[in-house]
Amino acid sequence: MIKDAAGNAIELRCTYDPATKGGDAPDGRKVKATLHWVSAAHAVRAEVRLYDQLFAKPNPDDVEPGQDFTANLNPNSLEVLPVCYLEPSLANAQPGEIVQFERQGYFCVDSDSTPDKLVFNRTAGLKDTWAKVQQKVSTIRKAIQTSETRRSSRL
Image (cartoon, rainbow, N blue to C red; front, side, top):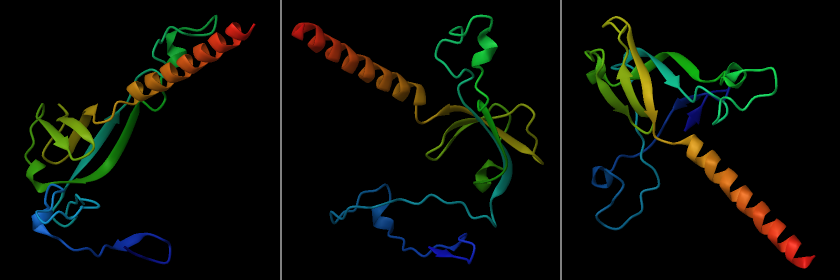
């Protein structure tokens, strides 16, 4: 990768081996990475809206006395990316149409989308962050229970 004086990427030098498409090489070589890119010169511009969990806690009613569920609203539940460059094939995408953005998730064309201003809403990400959080909580609870069991057996 070639960077300018400010550290911004200005050029990427790489090789393309069509035999490794999909990550498998017929000669047994291991593919380190696969790049997915869109030519800025040929891309279509669109607004992309990234929706996340509406609440910061799994149980929105888990609040301090005197508060209601709105105290647990996730301030980062919507991130709007006003200028994104997408595959040219999406230029004629119609409202309601569903597409997958490589390694990002599934997106639906917004009902307010027009040919002059395409808008895509993420409907499902490829990674479930709640599952990871729940797994960590479960692991911590098991560790605490094990620790308490050991401590009580010593008494």
